[in-house]
Image 1: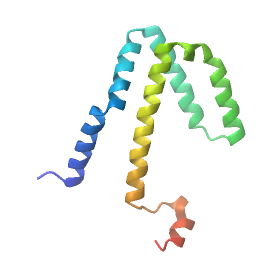
Image 2: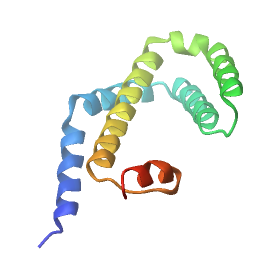
Image 3: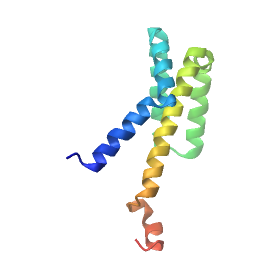
Image 4: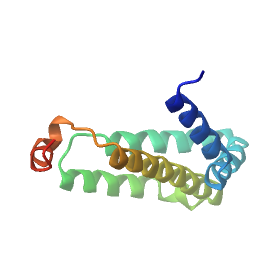
Length: 123
């Protein structure tokens, strides 16, 4: 007998794979992959963006770094293939974030950074 959580994960994964958001992402990814140089440039942009978003800098510096990235890649973002791919990728990220948020809210779990809230809620 399969574990009910594993079955639910498998079902959710299949539902996500068949969802129009993910299917659009795959379509845009295939289109971008037809242009290896462009794909390489997009991957570099994505890597730099990831590093900025996950850096441990203050809010002001984060804003400044983000602005620099936008300026540096403004021409790349004007390309319809690139823009469509990045928009589709963002939608998949939002879907994943929403799923994680809903699970986190449905299954309360105390973490050290929530200590004040957990105490107030009697956990």
